[in-house]
Amino acid sequence: MQKFRRVFEGIAKAGQSTDLNDFYTELFITERVSGEVNKEHEVRLIETASRKPAKEETPIKCEDIFKPLHGQDQPSRTIMTTGVAGIGKTILTHKFTLDWAEGKANQDIDFTLPFTFRELNLLKEKEFSLVELLHHFFIQTKGIRRYNRFQVVFILDGLDECRLPLDFQNNPIWTDVTKSTSVDVLLTNLIRGDLLPSARIWITTRPAAANQIPSECVCMVTEVRGFTDPQKEEYFRKRFREEILAITIISHIKTSRSLHIMYHQPLPPPPQTTSPSPSPPQTTSPSPSPHRPPAPPPSPPQTTSPSPSPPQTTSPSPSPR
Image (cartoon, rainbow, N blue to C red):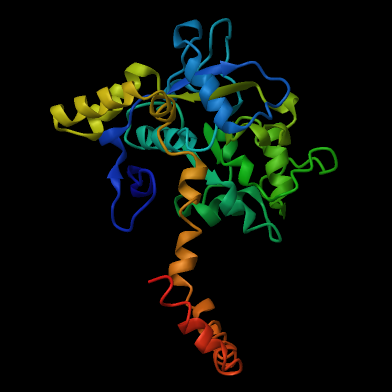
């Protein structure tokens, strides 16, 4: 569980990780009415979310993501959690897994199995049975073949990064956990409920990619809205142990509308993390500079061929001076 206990905040630096439990602050999660995908720019979505009063909606705690909501008798099987980049979706899945592993929550679950679509993309051309796929990622599951005897939670993080076709319409129905097929067929049948129907599924994604999963396969859609105003203050007090420093930072953020909106989400949005990337190529790529020395050779011809030009360059020199 060290993978989920130690996390990097903001732009990761080698060797500078933080214990998740030291700074984790509850995020505002709420149920969202499923429907048409919101294609509005994520910056606009952040601004819109920051204006919505939290009191109007019922918050859902991370550890209660599978608990029955009002008017429900049974927990939802398949949950989709949407949110803009950097809002804290992956941190939520880490916190859920860590709390389960440490015995703090959801002890009715026998196995919590977190996957990322980045990892699954690498297996696009390979075939596994569901049992083999679990053995591939989780050595501890070796020897287990009857998963229907256990309460299992699959976490599929980062649907927006999925490079698998997820062909729900044409993929064959697959019900045997010991029979090999493509990873795409395994995933579509797992999400659809044909394969290991007793399992619970938690999918996270950015809003624009949510329509990759048919709506009839999702029991409930939730949305991570980021920090409410009280949660912002709680986060900074945890992040900065010096009380005076924390108060100063909180006061400064309140005076700036743009900062107040930006810190609605725990991590900086993608434009801020990717914008510095062009500068390193200019400083670190020496390849252009070796190709530029050949450029000076044409310049000597320009200075030597028009011999009268040097006088022209020297004659105007007094005028500027």
